[in-house]
Amino acid sequence: MSLNDTLTQINNDSSALPSSGEIKLSDGETEEQEQEQEQSEEQIQYHSPVPKKEPWYKKLSGVPLNTRPASPYTLNPPIDSDGLSWPSLGARERLESNVNEVDSREQRIASAVKTILTELGEDPDREGLLETPERYARAMLFFTKGYEENIKDVIKRAVFEEDHDEMVIVKDIEIYSLCEHHLVPFFGKCHIAYIPNKKVLGLSKLARLAEMYSRRFQVQERLTKQIAIALSEILQPRGVAVVIEATHMCMVSRGVQKSGAKTTTSCMLGCFRSHQKTREEFLTLLGRN
Image 1 (tube, rainbow, N blue to C red):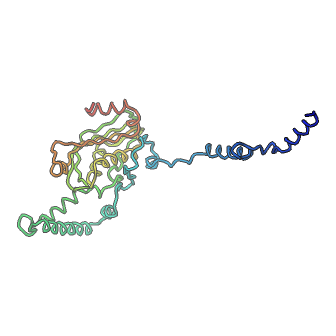
Image 2 (image 1 turned 135 degrees about the horizontal axis):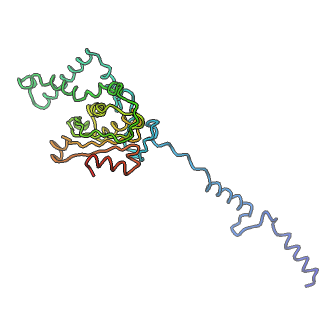
């Protein structure tokens, strides 16, 4: 083949080729399409992440509690100024009741107790039970008197400015409460500690806080947390620790019937949560280390 024939053949072959931007690939796609696909994949791969929702425990208050994330199934009611941190409408009505409403409530409870006695096979009109419904009504109102109290009235003016920055502990506070699952008592000891941040609380008020929250229908886990968070919001201290050890009659006199069983719960906030040495100092002073 002559040189001219060869050049003519090359020109014919090159004219049959696609333009540089449309070179055919083995998979049938053009280079331009492949570039568009790569850009699309890069956009998908490097898109901005969806903003995370703020954890529920950061919404409790402006106080940095430094608490580690809890299970989403953990109920953590906020504390309000009335101390009705696990409220029902009836609880607020009871807090605001006058004398006549209190008497009427007692009569309604007594009437309900009389019905219960009858359904259990007893005679509520026999001598031994004749005044039992009224006694029981008064007892239940006393057992749950925490619904009639609020943080403001309990604390009053017992918050003092003070530069003390060492641990404050009140141990062995007796508590009596009612299990909300079976309406039977649980009782034991409450230990409260905090490290002040320019403010201290009258010592008796720690016991009164524990009394207010325990004199309600409770579960021990929530009771422990309520005392700790309330104290944290009142004083805004460097840290709060609460430990409760209790015997539950629903485990002793019924169910598994284990008379020696005790339940211990704790709530550590602030430096008690974030600093192991602070937590260990508290537990040592408590006699638990």
